[in-house]
Length: 327
Image (cartoon, rainbow, N blue to C red):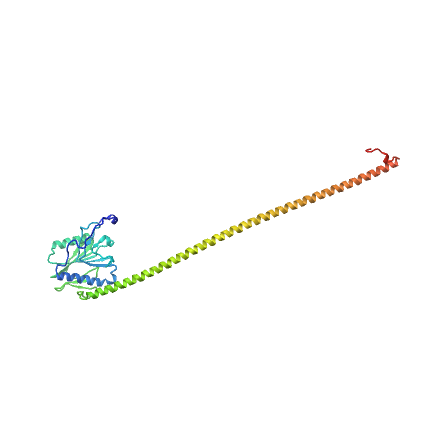
């Protein structure tokens, strides 16, 4: 079958019963209820994933409500027995594409060999794995199993057969068709159907209670997750703030260190300049003292020379005081 984009399908109706389909006799009805009630009991712990349906219109082709079949009984693995919104027909593409695995048809007087062949061909075309045609008078079963993508009839050399998929045993040794559960117990008519319904209701109630508990647990887990997320957010904000403050402190300390280094360098430079200035002043003072001393010695030398000259002049009879200036 070609793949179909379900989003592009027209919104069409898939009727619950395109044609009126009811059991044609009491025994026909009894075998349908026998199979449905007992199979539902058999899979009661798996009804979330195994659906057993009777006389339910099955639409295998998405977007085409003209193609349908309503098996007497069909077993679908991978779909729930009950849906909150209910189920008036089995629309395959709305059931995650799950194909009914096992189909039962109860023979009635109106059925013909041609009809049996046509139904076998239809079930073969649309993927059924096991197809059983049950005769009640006389008791007989025709078994069709899928092999190489075809429903092939198994020739019966015996008068009993066990379903590979369901594990139930069909027995037509006597004049009456009998069906046995996998544990070997005989399937009984559902005279205690109310008990079955009660059991289903109790299990549904337990499921609902469990779902409520699960929802509460999920809610608490979600709240705890939100609280953890909020704590993580606050922690991250605190860490980011602490990191920012640490960076700011580091910047302040680095700036202060740089300013201290600059002050120290300025002070060292000023000290060096002061020392150089002091050295220069000391050198200038020393040089001034030296010049003063030299001038003093020179003056003394000059005075001594003048004194000697005066003495010489006196010895020569010349009065130094009578000499004209600048001579």
